[in-house]
Image (cartoon, rainbow, N blue to C red; front, side):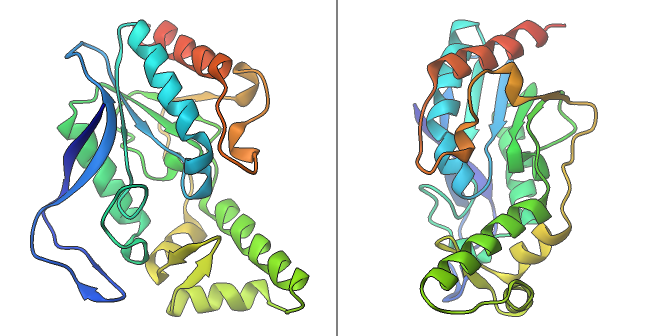
Length: 233
């Protein structure tokens, strides 16, 4: 089911100026039966989030069968969020995920790909194929440069990053603000003792590499199985 959770007490702001001074709520997919083991899932960032959402929801259903509650919160500025994407930062996302962990009383965490840059690493758990901020940024800038070349325009990667640092920039349909660009330039996965899960353990190709969102029930079952087998270890 979809539930709301209090992401912040602060007003949001973006290109159009400050928002209303009211607590900000976000949404989360949740399977909550008030059980002992409660897993917060921190999703990948940007396009990889969209490509893997069905896989993660399928994993939540499989975890339910293992007696594990799970929660998949929206990052502010993404999915159904009413906050502007331009105003987001890695710091803000870290604060949001820490607040989600407290609100849902998470006992464990699973961070997927870029989610490892922002997850509450005080919790025990897992990171699935973590990726660095510079790698995410390079991939998105490269895609813009290639698209411009195919359209007969020349764009320089370094110049695009410079613009992003000062003014913000549009990459892959996302309106990046300077704070998010600056954060991604130096961000490294935050795992501190969490177990790293490799894609090879799940079988099949990684869904975040596909051009379109997809699902793989077998991979979801394997991922849930790994977590269920280790959560009480």
